[in-house]
Length: 176
Image (cartoon, rainbow, N blue to C red):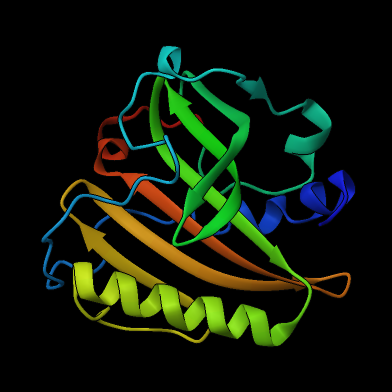
């Protein structure tokens, strides 16, 4: 569906939602953050097969706002969510998954819009309406962290990015 180079180009989109947890404390927190395929927040990386750490070149391809002591970023096999297969990158600190960034690259803007609307409806039903939706970025609080959904376009492709972040980040030691 797309080339490896496009995945590297879209790493910026994957890591854009590295936002602080807990911005919308009034949003109902009825459920934990969703799993993307077999991946869920706070799981031990030893439970995951085929972890491939991001290369230094891939890490240089984007600017992260925060980095944590003991942090590792991994490519993992795709995960299914809401009827689609998503490319996934996991963030882990001390072998615990604290972030799941899932990328769905589509050929047409209409597909992107359709996926966006369906996911928004699904996530609104689980977590309530976001307090302050911004065009192309939506944040929901969950029982165990938050979910961020955003859109991006590059090289004639249209992406939807879904990122879950554990509230455990509050206790991590920042190195940047």
